[in-house]
Amino acid sequence: MRLVPLNLFDEGFVDIDTPREPWSIQLEVRASGALDPARLADALRAAAATHPMARARLREPRLGEWRRTWEIHDRLDGVPLAVVDAASPDALARARSAAFSACPPLDAPPPFAATLARHPEGDYLLLNVHHAAADGVGTLRFMTSVIRRYAGKADPVPRIDPLAVRDLAALAGSASLEERVRRGSALLEVLATAAVPPARIAGEGGDARARGYGFVTVGLAPEETARVAGRKGPGTVNDVLLAALARTIALWNDARGAPWARVSIMVPVNIRPEGWWHEVIANFASYVSVSVPAAALGAFARSRSAVTAQMLKYKQAGAAGLLVDLLALRQLVPPLMRRQMAALLPLAAGRVADTTMLSNLGRLPVLPRFGLREGPVREVWFSPPAPMPLGLSVGAATAGERLFLTLRHRYALLDARAAESFARLFRAVLLGRPAVGRPREEKPR
Image (cartoon, rainbow, N blue to C red; front, side, top):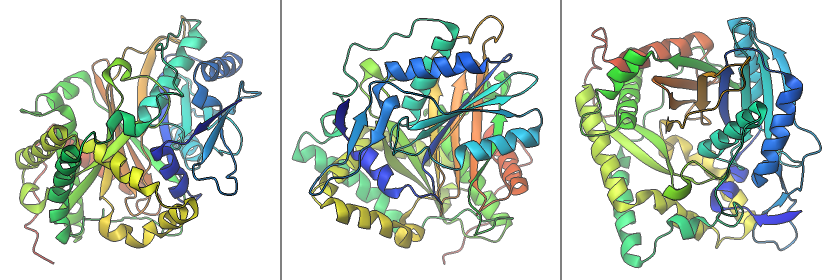
């Protein structure tokens, strides 16, 4: 057994995760055929043998201990794999909600759980990972190992110790006072807009007492994916997704008489070095906040320009490392006080929390086939958490020539029908459909 301190992000996710607001990562792949449960269990076990954090357990804090610690077990005695029927859309929706509406427990390894959802046109493998153990990129890397092991293929990893490269300050912390000031200036520009609180997505059909998540999947055809890429201008496809999501929220809220004066979107940013950009299961995703004011929400081109300009400033300032700097300061506070601070976050969330979150895995490396009979991966669905008051998040992944989008929604905010309506509007805005109009001018409140 090996003991490893939680990194700065791990500890934050442990502190804010609750049964009501689980911080789980959703990742699914769909095979072309049927998967064998016994082979899949063996593949999960073999993948965990390759990646130490897949065998982690959160050790109980000791008296006077300043940092929480992972226990990395030498092997897994068993793997959590459920097999369910998902022959109908309703059955698949129930399987997703059950699989991702709670986090895998951290009091015993592993920090993940898998579900094999049986479907006559190709089985789904649902992988639920506790965010304290891994980010989206790390979850994708583990899924890749599972597929390779199932197929009996080699699963090479970088020649580094994955437990020795977890120091976020060494990877992305400020190297000088000048760099810290530059990063802080980028943050102050965003905070200058905070006089107008971020919009909250207007609820519809939700029940404040309800727990759990629902999911809506939107798969774009190759020609639609190319259309999205063609709208990026001088920016990126991610800028298009962010601008379209901000416009969608403005239109959605306007139609329901809700404020939309400023849409703020949380964006994870991978801070792994280029040499292992898609490797190592851990939390290496920092966050920046993209703020789109009312003046830029009236037309897609203006929204996109606002997003592209902000993302460029963030990249030039290295702003993704600012959160690492701030969390490093948090470590100066005793552990009990850190947990108490996390418990107070909901009290301030309505004023400071972003409107929503969008996480983009980008263009994925070619995923291997499960096997000759099982065939290649046909679909990839991914989403980050969507705790209240956000209530909705969007995950994106491009595989082959298709863009796959997943809307995750809290039932406290939207019911299934409302989430489907929001997804249709988002798709229309994203593709620039002529039926999409513009929100009325937002008056100061």
